[in-house]
Image 1 (spheres, helix red, strand yellow):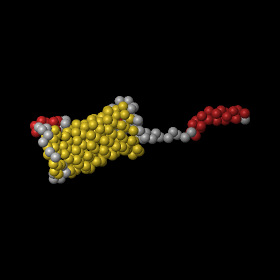
Image 2 (cartoon, helix red, strand yellow):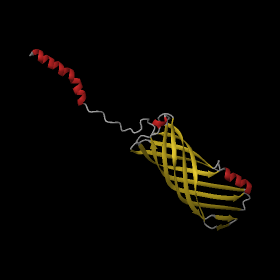
Image 3 (cartoon, one colour):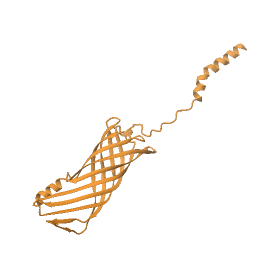
Image 4 (tube, one colour):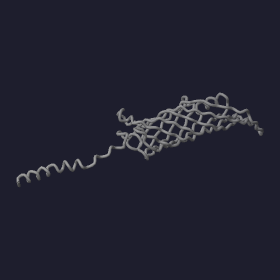
Length: 226
């Protein structure tokens, strides 16, 4: 009897660790939908300083934008934010002004809201790249002017209209915080304005002009992730 009890006690002792292990709850699956760690985590902020060129330096620009990682959408990450871009006529206005003996300026200011959707492609490409789709919507403020270098007359106009864009972007991560990259977007703008022609002390309103169109914008940037 004592031998039987001893064998039973030994069996229970040997099985105790396995029994205790089975009773422990299994660890919860990770909520990280991006094992590569390249997409922005929820609550993080991406801030960028941008530079742009259109039509072989006919127009150049600078800007800033920021994206806040709001929520996951399955394996994707949704961010919301804003941007401000300043673009100005460069080579085009210099060339036209030299030919016409005028000082010509053409500037735009574009504040806009933006939404990006990030894809977990870094784990497949084996590169530290965070790829996203982008849509934006805001207001374009445009100023146009031309002035005779002899001071005989000047022409000016200011306009406001909608600006809508969409495209793709990518962050190349140089560690956990610093990144570089580019955004390629198609931007549609439409606006109308009534310019004024000034000659001497007389200013005469001109007829209203309407402009609209779509441009392909390429912006490169430096960024930080907080």
